[in-house]
Length: 210
Image (cartoon, rainbow, N blue to C red):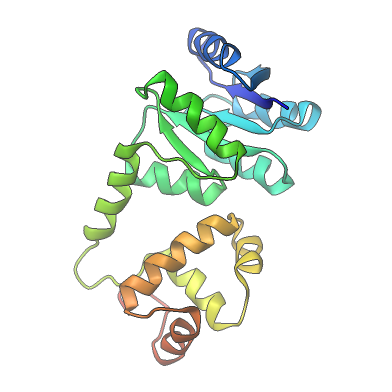
């Protein structure tokens, strides 16, 4: 059975190229295309694609907002394809529920494999994106232990919520919750959620760096 893909980009030439590339790939079928996030949300409802290849900067509704709406409904998996590789956009997209993040200068074969990878349940990241995420973790301001989102996740771990419940509460995917927890464990020097919950009981979490 072919992986059904919805292509979302506000540039017609880019959409055309992506449709041609993916349609020629074995095991992939492009079932639709959208010029903005609002169209994407509507088409996901009617077409039920397996994977949504999502641009970020678009008119009417940006990619991160569309991703949040699509993932909240369940079903389709969102793979971001954009020119932006700054940490803030990457984190925003992943927090919105995207399961992968590729750049528009990716090799065609790498993009095709990323689509297949998402359909298999994996989370492909362009090497430059992965490097940016790692680098951003080492550039936190002095005295800052946790980001705002990490503190929110840790607070809910302290309150006894499971990862799926935390994801629902914060409007992010379970996979993103796990990623935040990995960073939390590293930042506070623990190895599991029980130790993290105990740490949270002993340390105030009302502001960064506490």
